[in-house]
Each structure stands twice: as C-alpha cells, then as structure tokens.
Length: 400
Image (cartoon, rainbow, N blue to C red):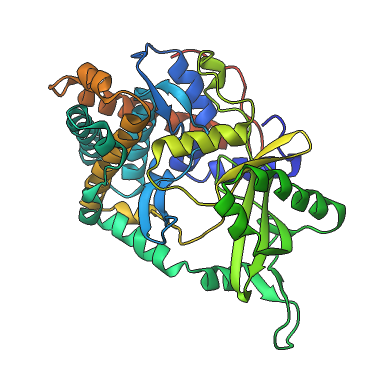
C-alpha cells in the first residue's frame, strides 16, 4: 500500500474482501512473492504479470475492428513464462468455483487452458516468425463469453460512454458537458490540480508517433476527473480527461493511470525494465498484443509516472456469470491460446515448446498448482475478512 492514496486503502480492502477471486485480483504482489520462492524454468518471455480471467477483454483496434486479447499490463515484466500460466490457472479455478462449478470441472478447465497453450506453442515453434507475429486466434468465435464481451464492446460507443460519464451543466440546448460525479468512484478535479494533469499531456504528446500527434491536436480538454479503477489499482492515482473534437458529439476520453514498479521487479533483478514505469507497461503491451490502443503512451506528473491510454473505447469484459457450464472450458482454451501468442511474440517459441515436450505432465502440474494456490488464496481471503474491514494484513510472509 506504500504511496497509495490513504483515503482509498480501506476501499481497496473492502473490494478485495468481496470474494476469493476479488482478493486474488488485488493480491498480485502476494503471488509474486510466493512464486519467487519456488523453482522456475528460467525460460524468459514478456509476462502479462497479472494474467487472470478478468484481465482479458474486447477493445477497438486502430482500424476500428473489435479484437479480444489480454488488456491489462500494469505488472508486465520479462520473467519465467510459467508464472503467467500459474496465475491464469489459479484464476480459472477461483472463477469456476464462483460460477458454481464442481472441483473436477474447474480443474479440467485449468488443464484445458495449459493444454491449449502447449499445443499452440508447439505449432508456433514450426511456423515462420512473421506468421507468429501476426497470428489471429480463430478460437474466439467458439467461446460464448468472448462473443458476449465483443457484443458489450460493440455497444460501448463514444456517445454511449459520453452519456454514462458526463452530463450537461444546464438544461440549455448545447450546454457544455462535464463529468458526472459519483464519489469516491468518480470525482471532478478543478484549479491548479487539474492544470497539472492537463500539463502532463505535453510530454505525452511528444512521445506519440507524428500521425497520432496530429489526430490528438483536433481534441481540446473539456473536463478532468479522478477515477477509481479495477481492484489491484485502487489507491493509485488515476485521472480521466474528457476531450471534444468536432463538437460535443466527438468525445475522446484519455486515462492517465499511475504506474509503479511491477510486483515482480524485486524478484527479477536481471529483467532491467525501463526507468519509467509507464514506458514499461507500453513496451510490454506492444510486445504481447498484435493490436494496441493508438493513443497508448506515458507521461509524468511531478515525480510520479503514468500510463496514458483511451478510457472505455469500445471495451467489453467477462463477467463471472458468463463462465457457467461449458463456457468455462471454452474460455479457458482462449486464455491459453492468447497467452501462448503473447509469449511466442515476446520470447522464443522453440525453446518454450522444447521444454513443454509432447506429453501432458506440464499441463497437469500447472493445473494442480492452480488448485493448491486457489485453496491458499481462499485461506488468505478468510484471514483478510477476519482482520477487520480496512485493516492491513501482516507484511511478513513465510515461504511455501
């Protein structure tokens, strides 16, 4: 919790206390410490770092098409490829339990995820590198949760987001719009603080490609707000800028999100990420994704480092109720294939495939780990609940 907004720390613990999966989402640093105690393959790729079922989603590509991919890279860093798989397998077990699956069904979903990862990695090992770099995951159409997320993203148009996040300042026709406050989740910012946030657009603009700078130049800031996002990010500083281009019907929402060092950084001294954590996230995202947000970049406000990206532009995510029945396994296979593509793009598919071999031992081991770590997560969640609302758990952690 060091460096986070003190007033939001209790909110973060409240959100983590809602369920074992919610706790897991907010406890990436805990899992990073635990993984560091265990043997690793030593085979390095770019890690998502926070690979779980809710950190994949639909969003608009630069050409306007809707795509589905890993979409959260706050913890990204170069590290042992299996760490992403262990976190994803654990999240599938927890999500399966939350969606009402029996133990065997959730375990089979985690197993299917890693089996699909391994099969796809073996295929990548025999493909031309350019084909690997632009590989499209066709399994997306077979998974209903993915189709549901794409449908949500299709509905999340700029006018829809405009109505959800802003309101006219008066009933007068053509009145300017401002953010719609809903404290503490969304709070308008004014005065010198707003000016400092808007000033951060200058260094951000300089790192964009010239054509992106030109596009951004058509938009002018209309309002600024503080927004609480996610679970793991609660307490970090997250700002939104509402901008207008060709009139009020042409909105652009930029998110300026504080980035600190990856939770894995203390355990990966050879990773050598960039000094700027916003840049670390951008480079990690570009390494793993085929299509990225055209406004992806980084900036700073004082000594704090920030990621900049679009907010809610045609975005859609998975809900736990979407993973009932056969949907969990279908979605698990998509997760495995997308992780394989990200690791193959940023690592060495032949080396990873060589380690995996042709048998099922690796997949079985990761799925079994997912069950064991899900059990431990539930114990940690219970400990958090017993500690009292808003009370921090002990910082000392014994190796397991």
